[in-house]
Structure formats: structure tokens, C-alpha cells
Length: 303
Ligand SMILES: [Zn+2]
Ligand SMILES: [Zn+2]
Image (cartoon, rainbow, N blue to C red; front, side):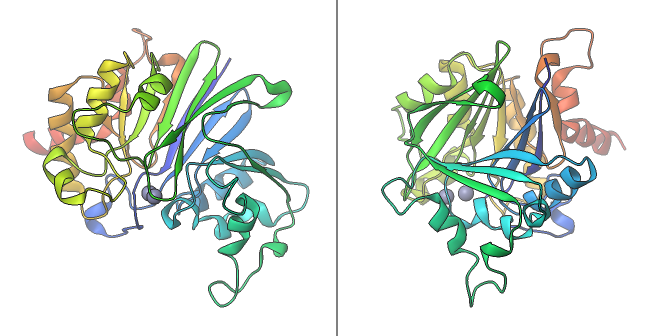
């Protein structure tokens, strides 16, 4: 059994390249999950462009793309996802918030229209299939339906879907974008993340910033920790970073979060996680493996 993931884009809202964003990365939301040779792609933000190059190099020709929702930062890398333009490739595209809003195919094609983009979706030669479900359903994906994917509705303008991908007794959750209510933990999310090995959560703000952004549809890293603790989840990946939070800010956040809960770390573009090794005492310390950022910061402070 293999169960791995890689962060290809960790930003929210808009990509933010530049020298102040080198450590944590500037690409928007995209996470690759590989289970026994099958690929699941969580969102198609700008990070999916580099993932596409990697899949081409590895000659991977099939994947299931699961959208949390279809705001720009979660879809606008897809027109630059090179494998979609190649014949003899196959992608299944799924969303849980569009069944009553025209469906995922219409929305997917909608961003590839004149005069916004010069290439129409018809130029994609891969076999693309579209599937709308309703957030809350449980999906059986992968060959023979062996990968169980539970879903839940999130609190976000125009709707969004949280995912829990389970395989071989392990579970990872992808919960972005969502806004919490102070003092009232989201019961849908608590059920979804119960006992999960890893929860990737919308941590756009900290609690102090959150109050000035009510209604924007995002949450805080402190709420992520509260939810993980309540649900007995093992680790929190702080995700969907605000594009105004540069590397120095994120370094401080990483330390503050780890002080508050040792299971928390900041997701960084390029970080890989092997779900099977999270509890392996003989492996390098998981958080050390997961967060080169904290190790790097320690280096900076001593150097
Ligand atoms: Zn977003
Ligand atoms: Zn959004």
C-alpha cells in the first residue's frame, strides 16, 4: 500500500511570485495524492502547471481532479495543465457544489472562452469526463472503487466541498475554503476530520485578522488547531496562505503554531508526505520531514 501527497500550490486568493515568497511558495491551491499508483488532484490552482510537467515526465496518463470549488485560485492553472492537451490521457473532473449551478463541465469550459483565454476547452485532446455530486455524499473512486472519499459542505460564498480520502486505514482531509463561526466549531468538518492522520485546512488568517474579514469565507490557523484537537486528528497542515503573508511572516506563524500544538505545521510548496511513515519512529521525525521551514528558521537564527 502506498499513500503519498505533495503540495504543488499552497496559496489562497492569487499567486504571489517574488523573492519574499520563495520558502513557502507562491502558487495557488493544488495538492497531489497518489494511492497505489492512482492519482487524485485536489484543485487546479496555478500549482497544477508544475504538477502537469511532473506527470508528463512520469508518463502518468490518468487522474481524478476533485475541486473544492471553482473560484479562480482553485481552477486557473488548468488551462496550463499540459497533460490535458494530449491524446491517450484521461481525466475525471468532479465537484460537489455545482449540481444546481449549471454543472462542473460548464464552469470548467467557462474559463476557457474568448476574450478571456485564446484556447477553447475543445483543444484539450485528453478524454475528459465530468461528474457532479452533492457535498455530503460518499464517493468510491479509483480502480474498482477501492478509495473511499467522504465529502462535506463548507461555509464559503457560492459553496465549497471538503474531502476525506481514505485508504488502508489512513485518512487525509482537504478542507478549504471555509469560514468558521467563533465559538461554534463546524460540526460538518468535525465529522469529516474525525481521527484523520492529516488535515489540510484553510488557515488564511490568524484569529486577530479574522474579525476584519467576516463573510470572506476563510478561517484561521488557530481554528484549524481547535478543530483538529476536538476531532482527535493527528496533524494539521496550515494551508491557503494569504498572499500578503511573506516568508518572514510565515516563519513566525510556523513557530507560533508549533508552540500551540506540536501536530501543526505550515504547508510549503514542494513538500511531500508519506502517510505510511507519519507514525514511524525509525523514520526522520515527521514534523522535521514535513517542515523544512522550521528547521531552516532555526538555521537562520543560529547563523
Ligand atoms: Zn481559495
Ligand atoms: Zn474561494
